[in-house]
Length: 211
Image (cartoon, helix red, strand yellow):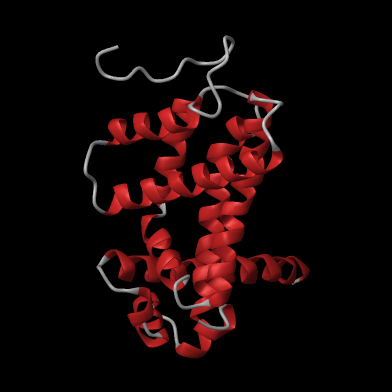
């Protein structure tokens, strides 16, 4: 009997984890089918996840809490993809940008939902700004390491523009591409390299056509 009782907490935790993931997956599936996040009801999500409405509220206070939870997963993966280059541990920018694009692609539905919700929900908008702020802060350091004489305000402005540009370029590319992946990656890399040139020790920039 003691051994059975000792297994119960772990079993309950695992069940809770699976139920939470089912709710999140159900939301992503509905978004992938073309539903706007604003148009999804708690009932829609609960039905797809095969849970009751009270069960939904056991895990998420409301839809805002749900989209923020999905956003947190996105944030972890994108940071992991970018951190080595942003923190100046590697100069392999092409591989870094590819990993960032892949992370956005893996969370395509979440990105769409967060971008949409940020237009009408202050908490989601604040999360989205904070999402970018980490990348901007690190990009400032990368820009200053490339040019120690760069004025603080210019470093902040360049980092702000590059980070938001990259997110929007990748997000729009995944929704309505006008060129292939490699072309968009070369374009974004060229813009970053205008601020942080490749080092002799680092990986050379991706060659552009005709070079």
